[in-house]
Image (tube, rainbow, N blue to C red):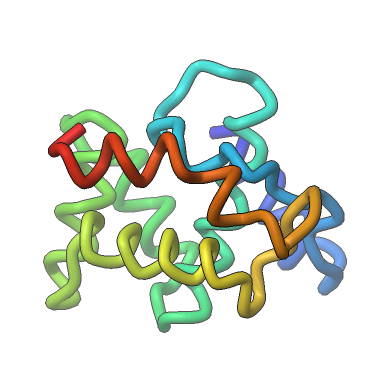
Amino acid sequence: MEATADYAAAYIGTNGSLGSKLPVDFIKKPLNSSDEAHMYQVAHFLKYLSSKGVNFRDLFVGTVESDESVLEAIDSHLRGQNESLIALYNDFAAEFVVGRWINRVGANENIADNLADHIGGFAQGG
């Protein structure tokens, strides 16, 4: 819910942009992490979904009206558009690692070193 508020305020309310940058360890945490800062930072993923043609209002309404968990409701909504949450989040994570449009905190030249523990865990099925 914090992410939707942050996204809506930045893009719908003001036609501005998200002022925050994502820390390098953002993708080490699940989307539904209870970390307060992370909850707001998920707005960057909502921005990414919007850039892929996902209508924010429809996604929000569909999620709020669903009896499923938030992530399940998002996935159900995306599947209705022949997409999936995991596929889009994987694409988002790849964009994050290569740094094409997602603003990150810290030096971009050390991204591989900074994510090495995460990538190693991912390769082992973590």
